[in-house]
Length: 237
Image 1 (cartoon, rainbow, N blue to C red):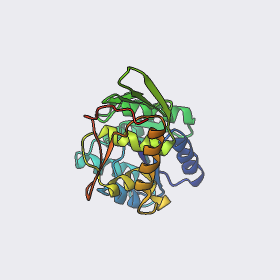
Image 2: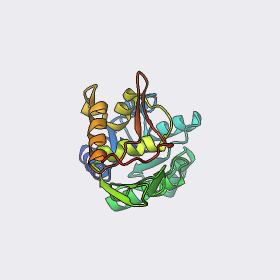
Image 3: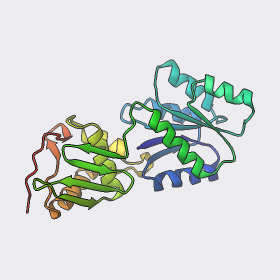
Image 4: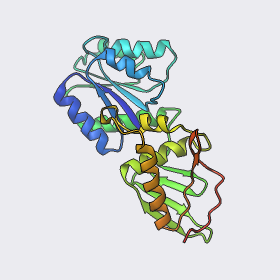
């Protein structure tokens, strides 16, 4: 869902970030290793994968990787570098990188390697994520809702609705503070307003209501939001 991209080449960084966002990832792109270290220590943000360039201003990608592993952080890391000799690959992998991609590369290979890293990750989610009669088709941005009459409602989602549901379904029955959702689901550079989560939640609930479906996301006053896996379907219209 969320990727930390550390790449100091402006054109390449922009191109990678654009492709990843088209694939529904939320991308935090930084251009130096010191700032990347601050992002990795931010308690409000959970990354799915990190992409480190090896040679960076400040802390190198190699050092970032070593720091993660010294703290027993299992975050999957894809290392990008122009250093393609076998000894460089060995050094990168021994530092804790999970995969290694030599520049120049095609974006299709980058995406394929990211998918492979996610499959090997303990946090990996299958293409169809199902919780309590709600199935999220992650390939097509569709929410499938099973009704009491065994009918299935197919509801097309926007990218942000998809990201919101995905995160809450992955953490079903846990109360997630609104501030956590805001930091997790909106790009740092977007600087979203404080009520953006509540506004997005209203839009999602209205969409579900238009399809006669319940909203499985509860508002817990003073605490946050929770995807209720024990919800019983009752047609709303």
